[in-house]
Image (cartoon, rainbow, N blue to C red; front, side):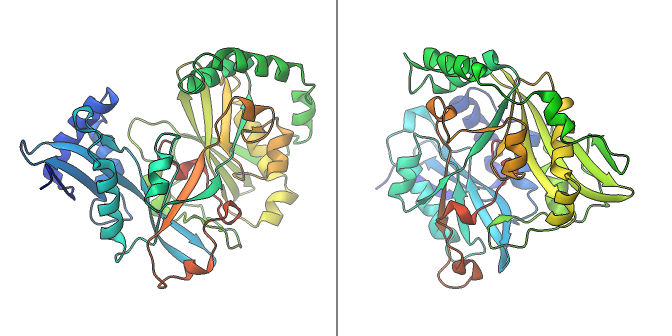
Length: 375
């Protein structure tokens, strides 16, 4: 008989969950963030969390929560779950609890509303996911722009130190010294490509507009976030988190939004571009050079940020490259950066139109950083 019981979370477990956070991560998740993330998520009526309880003590010693999001393509709109905040107390590891919690969650949701699970596992947890049936979709490519190369080198070295303890810092320093020598188009010339226009106005907001935004979904088969009003109200209502929004308008017509999040890392400051929201057709945005105007405004308003990042495809790559963004899967940045993997696990049989999409090809996905739990 097992020493542990795997069961669904109940609200009486909240304090135990937060205490486990303190034990495993060294700091507790604020209770208001927990409520926002799991109790007030608009996409699920029940809490998609599984816990491991020690039978002897009755203590919660493991947890496997899931972040609920809505995805869609041309044929389908439905619920997807992303595992996150997974933890097992150090005294109860190597007991198979991670696997048991994961398999229990998959079995529970297989005949319920969610159609798939997707995740961005780190290098340590990826092998375990693959053993349990998850499949690699591809590299979730991240693009970086470096305003401060020295700070960028230190940050990348600190992130790689666990894998390349002895070589991370010199490797990163060498890479960034080479990058510093590459002749790039001057900022002035870049900005001259997107001059200020009397027909366009970029507004800087501290809150998502409560109304006046009609998101225009892309007309393609790629899986992307469904951005209804509840998405904007909830996703960017995270407590104690600052989001800065850039809204492009032509007269009184909203053209697009760029949603950003300032962050302070261990060795650098960073601006994450977490979402880009079109409100008119791609042809109209392109004709107005809309993404270029928004990106210019965000960069100029965050000159003190050492690093700016976004998922590739958040805005057209041609625009991002013009502003000096470099993909972490391409040389030379791939030398000092580990690619983030996107993995997926279908939960349907043949009940959903999503089955018409090859979800195991990265070309069939289009996600911003807002789809990643950590942002």
